[in-house]
Image 1 (cartoon, rainbow, N blue to C red):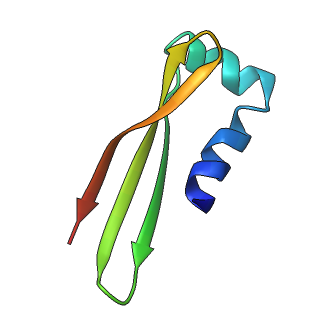
Image 2: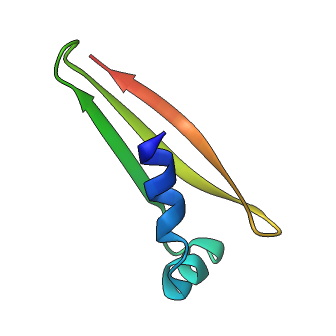
Amino acid sequence: ESINQSLLRLLTYPWIEDKVRRGKLSIHGGYYDFISCTFEKWTLDYTGRQGYAIKDRCFWS
């Protein structure tokens, strides 16, 4: 959840939100679990009308 919040917090910067909305910038976040030796990656997706969703959630082990 902290990764999701961090990704959304980036959108509080107007210049970042503008570039994401225009498709000029994509935002990704990741988390490495040292116990299970896996990496989880999220991509923030602009869905229009000020809506955002996490897509392409991937796991690597």
